Amino acid sequence: MALPHFYLENQVLAQETDAVFALRLADDDAKHARALRLAPSEHIAVIDAAKDYFECEIVSFDRDGCLVRIAQKIEDERFRPTVVLVQGITKGEKMDGIIRHGTEIGIAGFVPLTCERSIVKLDEKKAVARTERWRSIAKSAAMQSGQPDVPDVCEPMGLSAVCEFARNAHAVLVCWEEASSGSIRAAIRGALGAQGVLPEDARVIVVVGPEGGFSRREVSALCDANPFASTVSLGPSILRTETAGLLAPALAIYELGGLS
Image (cartoon, rainbow, N blue to C red; front, side, top):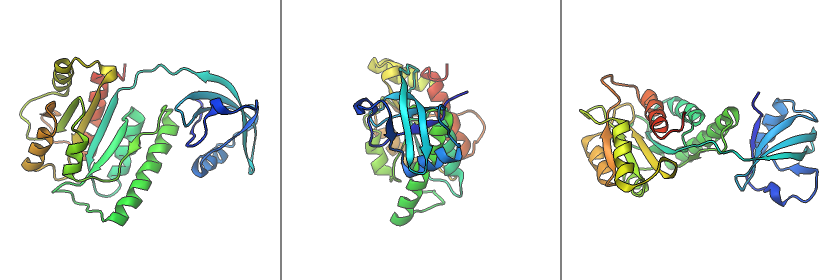
């Protein structure tokens, strides 16, 4: 059975000098730990602020805090490709699901994109509130699925900011229903091969539009943002944005060797 995972924001366990010490959990993590009814002698996985991975044994856990001792430092050598999803902002709770399930499959980061055909338009106050919610969802999903890191979730960006964000990626895959050809496999292999970049060193950005899709202007701007950007097809079916937002990055992760 997988250990419950917790992420520390401001504590480096290698700097702890006592054999038994207090774990400085964020409020939401402490709430989660209480819900799990963790008891002395149980073990948990802790990823600290230095991104080091430890298995810790609980010595005591009560309202005053959680005391632990380090059982072992874990060298996690699983390969996780860096695939970032730029997702056109969706209506309702679809974005929540994309971030939750995308975290589970190993997406490294999420960039909400405001598009011409986006049904949802967020003002600054709503954008901040939604971003906080999405980050909370990503953290919860990372804890549940045992990810070694919590994905980055950026505040919503416009087209020009996303184009700048994509400028230094090794490959940018723009999923477009009007693309007559071009597979994710061919796009990744072509881009990495042309640059001599290994999959473990690659940073790949996958771009998916909102419910109304991309305009031709947006597709042109995204493809012009990076010399290794291209449109890709996800097959003959017209997929919902929440389907494409999970399928496309999953295929990219697979092609990079991350699901083997």
